[in-house]
Structures are given as structure tokens and as C-alpha cells.
Image 1 (cartoon, rainbow, N blue to C red):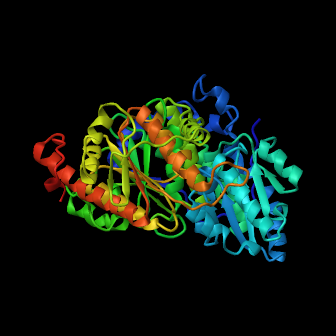
Image 2: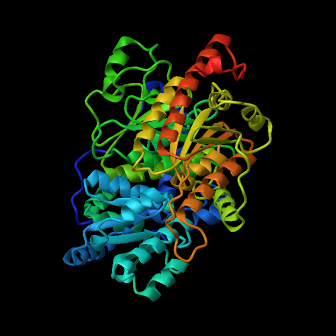
Length: 599
């Protein structure tokens, strides 16, 4: 059944929604755009037609299209959320913490950053980061627990830890823990029995499409964001986005990203105006990666900062283009990879947008709807189901097995001061890395396996995201040194987003995993393991699954924070050597492991 949207009471932001595509790319995208129009993709999506993606996808799609009219379906939630916020404030509770993973945490993070209000995000199992949130201001804290299934291991563990902390402080957990979950989930029943305030989300919406449902609105609204205005912006954008027309911004965007999927299968997205949409690229990354990375196909999104390698103009372009590039990139970079489309997201389109990039301009509510519809359209163009995530469960299962049946991880390949190196797998890719005798050598053998035409590096860091956020700054340096795209994901949150693409998308990735090993005894109540054991099992399990897919993986455990930074700094230095050797030989590297090469 299709819900006809009604106009939200709030006034929408007066920034027009626009997608601007470089002329050459627009020409290549025309066949894909024409197909979307001819197949009436937008109007069929508006009508809730689950047959769009084919017979295999129809059962899943039939229960995953509620997001299309979330502006109307979610409108009744606004008053209830505001009333609860006022009730909490009257009790002196003004610090909101969110426990959620994937889309359940990324959308509220984007919304509250855009609104300039505080929301403490817990999408981790790192004990240092958890303890920092648990041990401060508990008397003025409320926790929002967001879990669609109600059984997400990370979120359940966080809920248990906070319930214990509230109890220890003499606070009734039922008064301070707010639940967002699907009706009838195990968490729904548990929460109602315990007397928690429960918001039931629309069960016909998947997690990564849930930005404008209870999962996005409840924590954001409790933190003080203008959620009525957000819905109004989405509502105002829908007529253009649900039209079977060449002017449809979402169809234009999807066609541009899928114009040449055999040769250009990645895009790098940056927020050009460092303001309201600063964190939007991270949300786009999880939406597109988890939706399209399957059956060996997909479009790899890469969240970057303005001016970084993947969004810089090719320095072979003319001086006029290079000068206009300043709006997006600062300075041109050398030989931007040909398989990556640069994308800039902005609140309002600048007067002279750089002509090498795709520009997506609009308010946050409009951006959410544009990218969700474009991602669904990508599913049709790529011939995949954009609503399932068949490979996400494998890493979860591997972690559970390690927790239920603990085994020694085996001797490391080598130890370098506070770093221990492990190479999962026994195939040729793993054997090449395992033959190294130094940290530099192992990294050289890993990075030397990056395909110079279509390959990418995925850096995965299982550590304190807030305390060690400077580690992310090394992503751009590594990409520039290697002259190939680099993704950067904080574990375990990326397992609920880009983790699907790593295993189900094109087998082009090379994986560098860094884990901060902790002896922090922070317990998970009523569990035989603590948070330190959980995050280590999650890292080890995912590395095992990647290796089982025949992908090159180097796993590095650090016993101190400085070790993580050192490993990445060495990787940057080695990447430059790899690039120099590749350029001089015109092909791959010799793979020699000598100390003289690495210094």
C-alpha cells in the first residue's frame, strides 16, 4: 500500500536541489538515464512497485520501500519526540548518548552535526571509547538504543553496560534508556516489559535507508535537532525526485555513477563547504557500499576530505579548469585515478562549480532522499538487489565463533616493538605477505598486490575513534603516495556498511587491518567476555573471512596507541616506494624484502 505524503508543518530550507554533471560524463551517462526513464523507475518506486529489481529481489524489496514516503510516515513522531525531550530536560537530563550501528548511528551523527547540537555516538566496542562515555555525567544522561532486529551484538552489549552504570548510580534504567526498534522484535518485548519508552520504527525500511524514520529522528530530536524542518526539506524535494524525467536529480546522479561500471566503478565524495554537511560523505559511503557491493558488482564510495587525492583534478587538464578547481580541491593533484568519479556535496551550489566533479547541492533532507533514490536506481542499473546484505553475517558469525570457542591466535609472523603482525589465509596472496621478515617488507608485499588500474586499499582500524581521530588524516597521505584509492573504516562500525562491499563487491581490495589490543577489564554484564575480547574477536573474525575470500590481508595488533600511528606512517612511506618501483618498471614490483629498500 502506498502512503500519499502530506505536507509537514515546518517550512523547508530555501536551497534548490540540483545535480550538476560534467559535460563529458553526462554524455556517457545518457544511456543509463534513458533506461531509468523508459522503465519508469521513479514513478514505480513512488507506487511501491517491488518488481523493479527482478524476481529474485522482489520478496525483499516488497518489505523495504517504506523509506520512499518517510516524510509523511514519520511526521507523527515529531510531537512525541519533542515531548520526551522536554520531559527529560525537566528532570535535568540533557546529555543524549546513542548506541547503534551502521545507518542507525551514521544518520543521527550527520543530522546533529548539521544542526550543531551534541550527540554522543557509540558505534564501537572499543573499551577506551566506551569508558569515556560511561564514566562522565551519568546523572544527566539518557541512552537511546537503536536496533532494528533487537539482537545486534554491539548495541546489546552497550545497553547492558549502561543499564549497570545507571543502576550503580541509583538511577532506574527504565527512566533513562529509550528504545528504537521494529515492532515485535526481541528488544521490543524486553523493553516494554521493563517499562522503557519505546519508539517502534517502520518495519518496511532497512537500516541504511532509515535516516528519516525513527532511527534517525529519535536520537537527533532528543539532542535538539530540528527534525520537523528535516522532514519538510525531504518533502519539498520529492516531486522532482519521483518524476520520470531527465531533470530528476536522483536519476541523473545514479546514471553518472553507473555510466561505465566496467572501467569507472568508484566515486570519491567530499563535503565542499565545511559546514552543515560535513559528515554526509560517511553516511553516503555506508548507504552505497552496503547496497551495491554484491554478486561481484558494485560502486565503491570513498569518503574523503576536500582537496584529497581522489577528488583532485588531473594535472594534465588546462589551466582554466585547474583554476576553477580551487572551490573543491585547493590545489590540483597528480593523475587522479581514472576509475574514480569525484563528487562534491554542498548545501548550496557555488557560482562556479569545478567542472571535473559531479556536484550534488541541496539541504540535508533533500540530500538524504536524493542519495537513497539514486542508490536504489543503481541497483537496477547494476542488476543487483539494493536492499539485502548477504555477506555481512559472515563476519558476525566468525566473531561469535571466536567468542564461544576461544583459541589462541597463533604465533605472529613477526613482532616489531609494540606491533605484532599476522597473515590470515594460506593462498598465494597470503604466502607472499608471510614471506616478509620486516614490517616494511610485509607492507610492501601487501601494497604491491594493489591492481594499478582498478585496485584499492581498505584501511580498517579497530580502536578508539574519538581519542585517535588523527589516524584518519593518514588516509589521504596513503592514497597520494600509492596513487590508488584508499578507504578508511573504524571497526566494528564499518562491518555494518562497507564490510558488505569488501566481501560481495568486485574482488579488487587489499586490506590493512589495525587493532588496538587492550587489557581494559570493562565487562559486558551477563556475558562471559568483556569489550576488549569482543572487539578483538570482531577484528580477527573479519580478517579470517576476507582471507577466505582470497583477498590479501595484513593484520597488525598494537599494544599502544603510538603503534597504530607508526604502522600507518610506515605504510605511507612504503607506498611511495611501491609507486616508484611500479613507475620505473612499468608493471608490478619485484617484491624484494630488504631493509635498504625500506629506509
